[in-house]
Amino acid sequence: MRWTLLLGLVGLLGCGDKDNAGDDSGGDDTGGTSLPEWSWCAAGEAVGGGWDGALTISEDALYCGESREDRSLDEEQAAKVQLRLMAADLDFPIDGGSGVVTLPACAAFAPDEEGLQTSGEGVLNMTSVTYGSETFFNLFIEQPMVGPDGVVWTLRVGMSGTGKPEQLDLHGDYAGPFLDPQISMTLCLGDCADYTDQRLLGSCTFEGVGSQRHDLSFEGGELGLELRIGDSFASTEPAILLKAEGSLNGEAFTQTDYWSLVYNPEHHHFSRDARVWLDQPIGDVCALEALGFDPWGEDPATTVRALGCDGALLSELPLTGETYTPDE
Image (cartoon, rainbow, N blue to C red; front, top):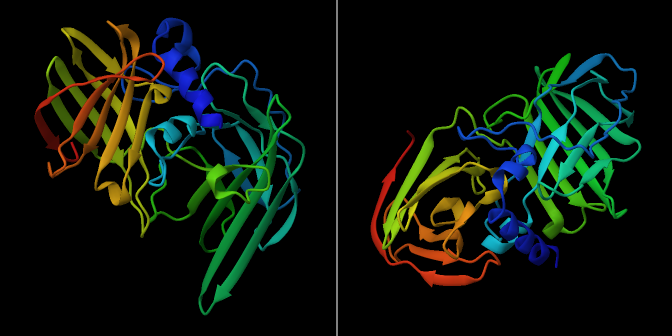
C-alpha cells in the first residue's frame, strides 16, 4: 500500500536537514503555513466558460488534507496532501448551467516529491433553485489531475449558499459550516468511487479558531501539542495539529511543519493521537507519539512513545503529568 512507502519517506524526512527541506514544507516557525515552492508545478492557465459570474482564486489558496476518524496514525501519515490553486479569474453562470473549465492546481503527497497537476479540461455545473421567497445555489467543479506516474486523480470543488451570487472566492481560509457560501474540496483517485482514496481538503491554519493545548510530561522530557478544531453539523469536526514543542533528554525542539505533524482523532475528538517528527534526531529518537490523550484525562491514560527514523517503536516513555488548556 502507498501509505507504507510514505511512512518511510516522511520518517527519513523527519531525520533530515530541515534547512534543505524547508522551502517546500509549507510551514514556518510561527505555526503558520506558507505557500510551497514546487518547482515542478506548471498548472497552466485558468479557462472559464464565458459566463456572467466572477469566480476568483486568491494568490494564497493553499489547502491541507484533513484527518479522518477511521484512519490509523500510519494511514493518516500516508494520507497527507497539500493542494494549491493558482491565482486566477474564472467565471460561472449565475442563473445555472454547465460547461467546460480548467481549474489550475497542483497537489503534493510529500514535500520533496513531484505531485499532481491539472490535466486537461474540467467540468463546471451550476444550479440555482428558488423555494418560496428564497433562492439557493450549488456550484460543482470536477477537474482531472495527473501525476508523473500517469495515474489520474480528480479534484472536486463544491460551493453552495443562498441567493444568486455574482462573485465567489476560493481563498484557502477556514470555512466553517455556518458561513455562506459553504466550500468543500476533495481529492480522490480516478473517478472517486473508492472512499478509502478520498482526501478531504481544508484550511492549513484554521485561522480564527481558538487553540487547544495539551501539555504532557514524561520521563526524560515534555511535549506540548497545539490543536485547532473547527465546527461541524454532525460529523467529526475538521482539525489541524498546528504546533508541537518540548524537550527530550535535555534537548529542546519546536515543530510547525505540516508534513511532520500527524494527527488522528476518534469520533468528535473524544480521544486523540498525534505523531511529531523531529527536525533532527535526539539520540536515536526521530519522532514522538502521544496516544489516547483527551481534554478530561480519562482512562486509559495517555501513552507517550519514542520512534526511530524508520518509524519503529524504540520505547514507551512513562507519563508523569498532563494538562489541558482550551481555546487560548
